[in-house]
Image 1 (cartoon, rainbow, N blue to C red):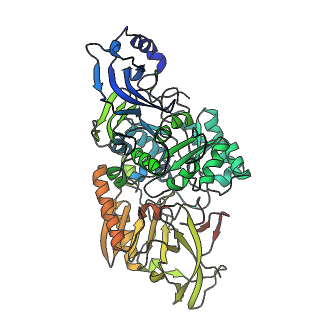
Image 2: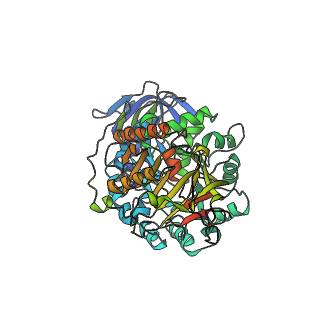
Image 3: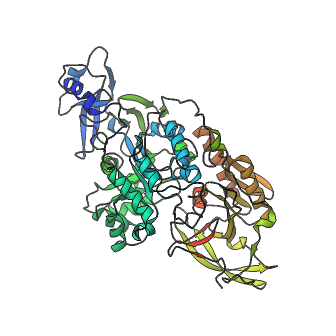
Length: 608
């Protein structure tokens, strides 16, 4: 694959690299006395010198050899003083929008933590405004040194026919994006039923990507390690981040698929997934570490891939192996290892200086031979991006929302009125740290012809309102797992990003919904008629124009409100946002109704 993310293509500068390596021309920069983390040999190479020219590595001084012959009067010399120097980190699967900031601000947040590149699926923004949104995000990303390598959303909507999104992406759109310099592959193919059923659009999207010689990324949630997984991989999907069991990781890499082990702000899968490689004589070249979704507060307080590396080592993964999982393995997965992923001659000079291989404290970051971060701070500061007007006009909710809107008629599966008393209903149970929900059947009161929630049993009402096209459609269900009194609302509701409201009080739910309609989207917590916390996300209802530190503080305020309201779940905002994602088992709620995500059919609220 042709890589456009280097300072210069190798064929334009290899003559100079050849001369620098022999001392015939001076290097632009020389790093001396580094302890090189060699991801090609799984070694620590003491007292290594690294000569850099044209943004690439020209020479490695190993085994007592030095780069003194590469130093000229204008060469910048950096003494690493024994610090560990590794290839800078790459995240093999990330949704920037989940951090609630644009890509240039995201770069300012993650580059100081050692990240030089991200493989970014912008399907959140694309669900709201399609390729128009993607073009604006791409323009913003071009202003920073972070290598924002795009894998356009393949499933907009996530599962056709089950929800209403702001836009639709098809194979023709994917064919267009495959000609963009910023695009390196196809975003996660969540429509596994469509792939397994050989439906035209998902298969053609995969085929357009394969014809372009690019990588198809996956999203396989079926708990099958036999013929269904074989069939999904046979379609051309070469990596997947949706493993939740150690056996999923093992099965995928045995079949030649890259297993992307996830540890995000809310999705805490790595402890379990690490069991696939810890204590087993298994080759890990097809294993990567990814974050998928990070809250701004996580980036500010804990870091990015450096955070995941710390956890990997804590869970027993060898430190050098862990570094391989965010460097050379990722580069090989996306077929750019000729240019990135290792500190070796000819490769991009993307380096991270680390104090130790346990805490992974990042001291300095170099991208394409330029120092871009030191001491935990970015050395670049892009001006605020000037967003077009359309991104601030994404709230189109035709329904006149009031407390009565949140009454749930007690109807049986045939649409007949149920008598007052109680009724058995389907409930979406969310689990801390996981993306899945459990379908439960519980009895709730029926009063005056309407189903009631049971706050003392943590059974809350849930509503999803279409917010893109003024259709006025909405649907109701029940949720368990959040444990709050009051109401929560958000427009970050994967993947259609309609208006999602959960609560136990109809008046609070109405106030929460209307607050987000009025401010252009975001997340809000309400209790007893009072707004306890609010994050305004006016850019597509997903992102803020403010700095990551400012947004992180707003998010901390809302999370404190969640805790005050009774929620003990980590990153509950992210977990709640998946209640409407109709491509992960078991039960989800979209603006069209309850979806059984195992059989892919609509099901009624009442079980009787």
